[in-house]
Image (cartoon, rainbow, N blue to C red; front, side):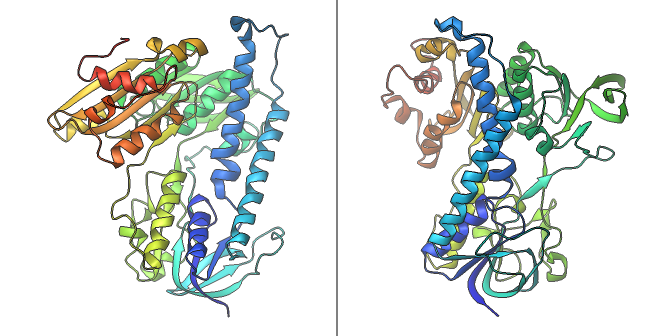
Length: 469
């Protein structure tokens, strides 16, 4: 029986990054995977959806190219070609993960893992052919077992994806044709991204959220701005409504909603369930081992340690925020602690990005959270309408909002909606990690003309001295 220092269960972003780092640290390492190297994110989530969203963005730009003096003939979208490209991109990165694991001397065990006892796992056979060079199912020993099994889409009662009338996110990413109409259940990041995508592709989109507003995890002002932006683009947004009944009818799906006691009815060619995700804890043997759970996820403490010595959990399976970059960071901290290194004692603030049109990016406290904590805050806001680069791009819809502690001037949070804000949020991520204040940011020089100048102006606005507002 093969014995390892570390076995990682799950080859998603958190798992494969943890395994690679363990290999770099000289630990004999294996990783167990049952279906996709790179996990859902690389194969069926973050990466292929961003490829499709980029195709939609290019289509939108082509439709309005004459505004910039570029004449094009009636552009159209070839959804089959866009889907094919997204699968090619995912495949390319999947191959890259295989190469990196091999380069760092990480063994890949192909199968569905169960922890028999601390220090011992069994990989059971799975359908389909295993990738070349992987180890077969069987029992394997390890001093440390890191669970990184991620999360799966949440299934709503009575709404079972069939690939025809009712879609899961996988069906929505591999469509052979653009539906005339689509209703999307869930106004979180996944639902908003798909609403943006299919609206751009030409579908009549209805977005349904049971809570009072879209993007409930985001700052309320930013979420409201997104709702207005989607409505302006033609998306019907329904909030505060519960699904009461779904039925298949000729030509599509009939949906009945309970909207605060009022019954609403609508029909659509397709219904997409995008109601979030749940941690993958089943089948691992956690109950018999006594591994504690919290709100359906594994209760993991510092450096991913669970209540059972020698067993760790990182990423989505360890609870929110369920984001790939958070999983990667947790994986590195976990194996560095296993190797006896002294990683950072506190996790850095985790940024969030939504790649709709317009994009959303945020980090740190929202205004609602700061006020709930009783924080006295200064708020700065700056619209992209006053940013020269945004004007040249023709993308002025959006704003930057920053929160500072009133007494110390310390940055507490930053929230943005607008063009390419996912590329801007690392500025605030670094600032928060370093404990930067408003004065630190005010004394930075931002290059002109760039979108990043909006960050500077929002910071100035917190003291009522923005230049271009």
